Length: 483
Ligand code: HAM
Image (cartoon, rainbow, N blue to C red):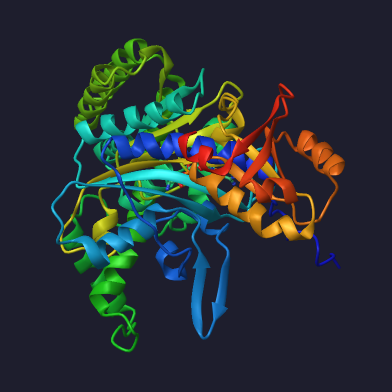
């Protein structure tokens, strides 16, 4: 059993030095987002578990901290986007679009802890709700870069993909929606584990009908449904007793049987995707190759033009083109994306930021009408870990040391006056000697010591010692107001 003084496994205590450095980076990011017109919002950490069931993607759903409480199924938020869009649908649908919203706060994922990967971490991010492609996408991408610049992160790389483009190509190849879905979200697997792993995955989720159980060739869907109904009827299978209507049963059967017909398209799709996956690199080099591949495959892609437009706008935003890389097999863990997706990495392959466009989420959450949206989130701890060390704070820190107990109330007054002049001031609560207070002040990096004894009290003054220069002088209380 673990000891109750240990943090829960995988959770971290953030001590003041780290907290201070992180707060500095957080402030730089938040200032940048605010400067671009993004208004801060705060939302509950606890959400209904159901919010995450549909659009999050199986990988992340498996990492959600879930619990039952008072008969409710709840979850700790694993990210902000779903919560924010939930709040939009609940409270903000009447507001004029676009809405630019920023957030900053803890999220929870049950991950294997490793360098830069925690079970509780902080996301700082934005959502641009009601912002269509390509301009809103470029704004989000450029803003993500601007935040990193402001935090003093150098040498980062922006990797850009486009889920809409992949989907369009799969539709063009005639793949049905479920197969498309599996393929779209398997691209990362294809790169890491190879094509066979993706084939195996397709086999697991989309079982083809057993050999021999095939539809007669050349029937359209209506004809095929009629044929199936006829077959079931001939076999005296009564469909009227189940929970589904006979039409529904037949439509499902039909979809299953049709999957058997899809093998040639699936093979073409896998071939196309693996070739697309090899096209990675600078936009100027890769975009023409993508265009060629699309043309050779006899397909059309409006998303390709959109991606080009986003990248051109990014240059207009002043983003250094040398940082940008296209990777059409970029796979994000989240499944609500519909268009642009991107990730930003530091020089050590650590992902600092991720985001993209998700045009269906408002509808999926029950919004009155579809609303296009795009956004991103930084992992604050990761950004802070690679941000340039913060400049030494210009804080002036003073310790007020009462000589005896009788001087304590007066010491509090001196500290109050110092704070009004912008000092960070503490008063010794341990009743230490002057020598001990001096040692303590030096150890903590305190800049000034204000000593107050009976004489200072009588003269409404204090002794002010600059610990760096060792200058010491008597200061009248009234003088502080002029500092
Ligand atoms: P995400 O890529 O899953 O996107 O997370 C955003 C960032 O959080 C990552 O880029 C990474 O820096 C950081 N991060 C992720 N997991 C961990 C972890 N276990 N420990 C530390 N840092 C981590 C999202 O969550 C989307 N909601 C972003 C978004 C907003 N898309 C559209 N709008």
